[in-house]
Image 1 (cartoon, rainbow, N blue to C red):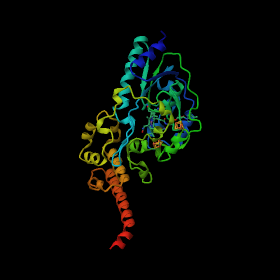
Image 2 (cartoon, helix red, strand yellow):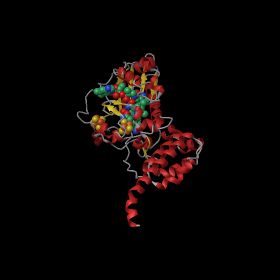
Image 3 (cartoon, rainbow, N blue to C red):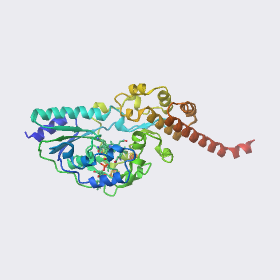
Image 4 (cartoon, protein in one colour):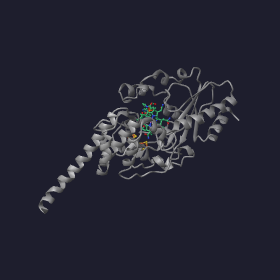
Length: 360
Ligand code: B12
Ligand code: SF4
Ligand code: SF4
């Protein structure tokens, strides 16, 4: 059996759903990436503007790199339909943090490769490295890139997470996936609540709810807050509408099963709970979850925005308590939410008053 086949068999045995091999050649679309950064589309994610020369050439990242093994993990779980006073969390964040899950499995794959080729130098990446993961995955034949910039395929739809091993072993590589599978479809562009997909294959992260609720450290721009709706961590709207998701299958990886406490959390209860916590308690409460990334103040900020958007007066007492939080970020978003609820009440009263006047 060839080395490539043995590596792939091992990857599948480790419950990766997809595996492919590509060269360590520079990514063809690095010019697009440079323009994206130059246009400021990365917003406050300053790390994306650093180390561009590494993204431009995997052999700079790992000297002597010859091959890249790309793996994909299906994380699809049952669709949730939260009610008006419930928050929505992106599917990828409902279970255990995929960085930990995939890192563990990739480390095991590296150990298996070293049994086959003891001299191999290897480096593992999941999300945070200076690697253009989607382009590499497309090149390794895992799937194609859609107009919403997601890598997807006809076995799992869009619910795939990616990881890579850069290796100094010369391996036989797989044919790239070059077909255009979107055709005239534009569903994802139309579905985006904030119009963050500014053109096919171009996403302005500064408008993306995933960025606003996870990566952004400061205040959510006021004009975008109403569009965030009840999304309190990430967004899946442009993924959910993709017709290729008819092929989606339930995740095999048990670690991606949704935590009970994260499925459709009650917003009022969550705000109460978060307000009572300090950062240490927050870290304990969300240990192992991607939600840790938002930190206590970021998640509180998001819950305040969602409650403002729910425009339900039952949230007024807890939002009023949030006005006294130690974090200015939380206080400001709580004030915005209260104002939004009050405006709604004002409008309701104004609408009712003429009839009320007649009745009197
Ligand atoms: C920064 C980042 C974000 C940013 C910016 C997203 C973006 N689209 O650029 C924000 C915070 C908004 C974000 C959101 C999400 N992210 Co993110 N993110 C990243 C990260 C770290 C870098 C992406 C990047 O370099 N962007 C810059 C742009 C220019 O690069 P690109 O998106 O790869 O774009 C390529 C295409 O547009 C293509 N292209 C350009 N023109 C053309 C033309 C044609 C015809 C074609 C085919 C392609 C094409 O070339 C570009 C360069 O190769 C990657 C991990 C990594 N290291 O790659 C994860 C990653 C992309 N994210 C991931 C996920 C899961 C998400 C979310 C679904 C999470 C959520 N539910 O909230 C959303 C999805 C939003 C979306 N529609 O992209 C996964 C995606 C897996 C997949 N199947 O594609 C990744 C790969 C992480 C991982 N290891 O699994 N993310
Ligand atoms: S994740 Fe949400 S906000 Fe971001 S591009 Fe997709 S639909 Fe738009
Ligand atoms: S929704 Fe349509 S345009 Fe968007 S990625 Fe899916 S097939 Fe492509």
